[in-house]
Length: 79
Image 1 (cartoon, rainbow, N blue to C red):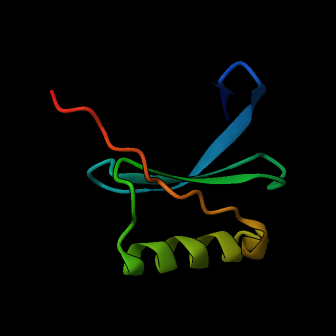
Image 2 (image 1 turned 180 degrees about the horizontal axis):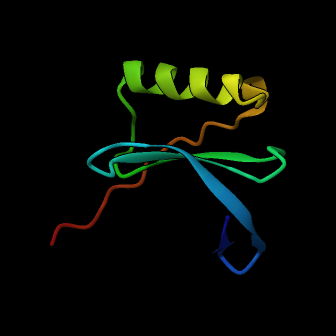
């Protein structure tokens, strides 16, 4: 089990339940599966990847209907 902090507001343990071989996305769940995140390096996941992660989360007992999908609309600054 690992620990993480999100913006100084949430501290807790987590488990990486699924991880892309190229580290493009990860499915992270709490030890008691009361919380879950799908993290991605891109603003949108490919539909097939999203379905794969939802299926994995459901297999772990996560209520995927409770997931909140955040619109990623910010324009990234150019380097």
